[in-house]
Picture (cartoon, rainbow, N blue to C red):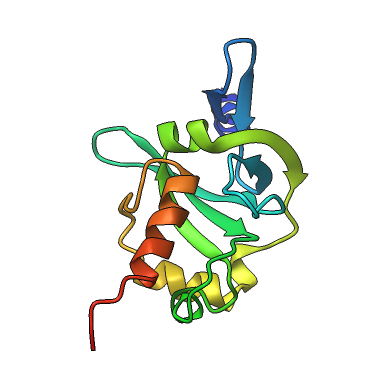
Length: 147
């Protein structure tokens, strides 16, 4: 009986209603296309991690490749030009468009992700969707606060 519970738990995933006709099943390690900004058509999301906060709200840690932020400061925050975010389940649901497949990237062997993870406070900042988050980061990096 216990093994059946463990198997069900390990094979479960979040069903995200992306449109009214079908549900999408989001699992760790998947790579997804998303509602991207103009010029970032090659950008993809990898589902890195998932957790629930104390209010039982689900959040995901995602890796976003193919971002085109034109700021000399971008690489200070994301040295490999790959961004990592925490995003709420509704925000992720709103962002995803279709499943690309399984990612070959591994969070345990990426020093940039490990550094980001250590400094992360697991808050959902910058915007609701992935597109909003990237735009906010670009706006912040390009804000001239004087010298």
